[in-house]
Image (cartoon, rainbow, N blue to C red):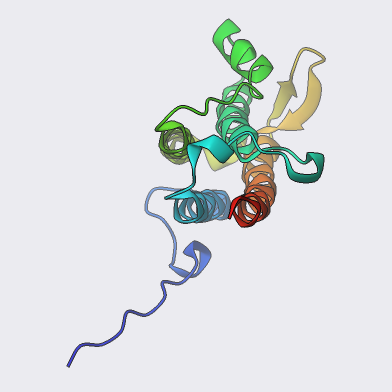
Length: 175
């Protein structure tokens, strides 16, 4: 007799991640959950629909590019570094979404890579530095290490939610 698979718990219910400081566990769990939801929702998403903007909302492709870019930028600021020319160019081009064959898979993979990079960064962050000041952007707006990392997670989850809804609407409209 075979048993049916049981649904996997959300990441925050799976216990702590090794090496990630306790105060950063929610950041890691949120990023893992976001990556899983994006991969599941877009595993067969048509490349031609990446730029669709139903009712003028941001496209699935924009969300994917933006998600990856934000994670990269927040990690840069948390390390107390300035954005590179390449990062600024990526930011300026987040709306430039390719729709050639394989584009969806490439964008999902790029987002997954940025999640992996953030997950590799989290264990290197000493908890004693979480409240340290970090300037953000050209205006050097005030934040902290934990502020940047929590923002990376909450911003990611917000955009993933928008992406999931837009993907469903776009798919429904294309059938």
